[in-house]
Picture 1: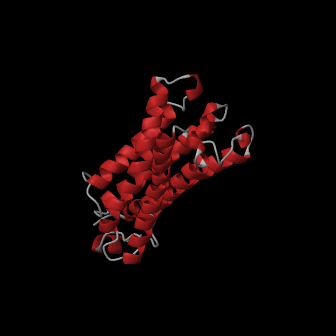
Picture 2 (picture 1 turned 90 degrees about the horizontal axis):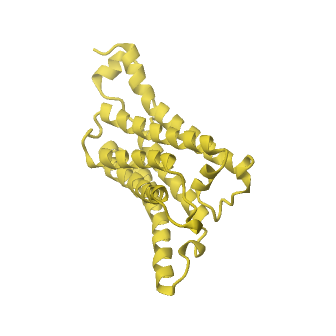
Picture 3 (picture 1 turned 180 degrees about the horizontal axis):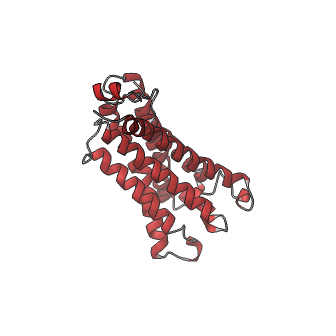
Length: 229
């Protein structure tokens, strides 16, 4: 039989995950309203632009918190035996979190002065991150919400919307290639990226956020913690 302290820690882990991601997202929003990054256009400029100035440390902390929250959230699902530690969903979550750390380690490059290895790593990591996060949620949602079809639809819907935002970027690249144009000028890239990131983080939050806490040892022993059921 588990002790009350162990049961409480297990119950609070999903809340910690969502809180970490929420604080990370709030720090990104803060960068948009505080100088000197308040001059960066949220419509045309990507989120990574925030890392090109003296406020880079805030950007780095924000992404680290989102990565930490993501790992904690999936760890909670594994401990609750809702998904397997070695599963496709866990693998895609790992790719998402590693990509976030690579984005921090290799800031965005100024492509006007030519490519470099760090800038290429940053670009590839960004693509991997934005694709892997919604896929991880899609793969996990069926197992997590076996008896909660409404909750499953919410998580799946957010994941699909996140992927559709990425599809907007792919569409712009295809159109630009056919017309010998600059693809990033065809769409409001900064806005699309922010909406893609927002729906992705909301998707993973919807997957791990509990509606109630089963903190008594008797309840914890009788059945695993139910999340959003």
